Structures are given as structure tokens and as C-alpha cells.
Image (cartoon, rainbow, N blue to C red; front, side, top):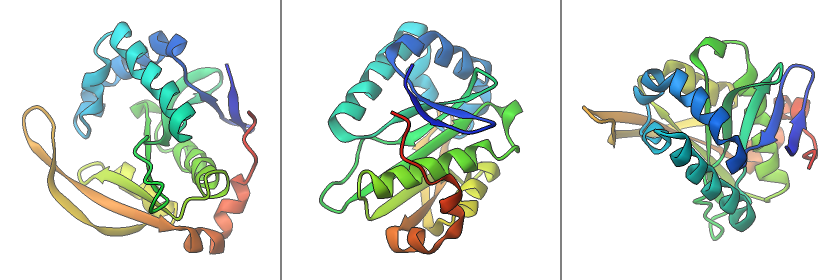
Length: 194
């Protein structure tokens, strides 16, 4: 298992298709919670479907530099984060994603782990702009974006179909010039442990 970043209280590891059982168990345990805000849990209904999902994630890292990272606390997978593979190399922009088990929220893991991903995006990939799409009803998610210094650019009304309703999403962005001026990012500045 390749370690991307190690701190005293969490580890970020590259997820591969061999982690399908572990990731499926995480999603399955909080499927109802995750599905309230996003449509991606439908792509991980079985271990085999999760394996295929992760196979694509490995390909996206190799082709686009977009990591899909497992967030580990005390050796257990508690969440995931990274960059969506739709990196726009012409505009040098990408989307950041993150999720964590409901019972592990509120401890700062996602905020600190996302700082590592943001640093990677701006230093290793030389991106200009990052975006976060946060479900309007998921207060914790958009609060993470705000703690990270992202600016709320607007709302995409009825942007996702969640099986029984449409949901709005707030759109946040962080520009490289803003990141360079934000001292909080220096706390997690590192070269990936790969």
C-alpha cells in the first residue's frame, strides 16, 4: 500500500482495486448518509462494482495525476479524498472531493487531509484553480471548503438527481494566488511520501 502522506493522527494512502472490500464496507456502513448528498454511492453497490470503480481511479492517477486517497485513522479506512479525473489542463483547474464516515466527522481529519491534496495540486500538478462542489444541505461539507479558504462562487440549483429528488450544490473555488498567501497551508506542506 503506497503511503501518500503520514501525520501523527492520520495517513493518506493511494487506493487500488485490491482495497475494494475495505472501501465497499466503508460506503455500505454509511450508504444512507452518503446518498443523502451525492450520487456516487450507487457506483459501489457491490465489492465487484467497487473494484471496478477503483480500477478506474488507478487509471485516472496514471493518466491524469488525479489521486484517489484513502484516509486512515488508527489503521482503519474512515474516508476518501482526492482530485476528480476531469482535470482541465488548458485552464489548469480541477475538482477536489472528500467524504468521511459520519461517526468520524468533526475531528478535523478532512480539513487537514484536504490541505495535503490542495498542496499537491498546486505544487506537483502546477494547477491554477481548484473547485469544491458541496451539497447545499451538507453543512459539514461546505464548512470544510470554507475552512480551507475556498470562496463560495454560487449555487448550482437542482444540480444532482439523488434518486428521489434534485439537490442544489454550492460551488467553491480557490486560486493559486490565494493559496500562496494562506499560511494554513504551510502546516501540511510536504512532498508526497510516494
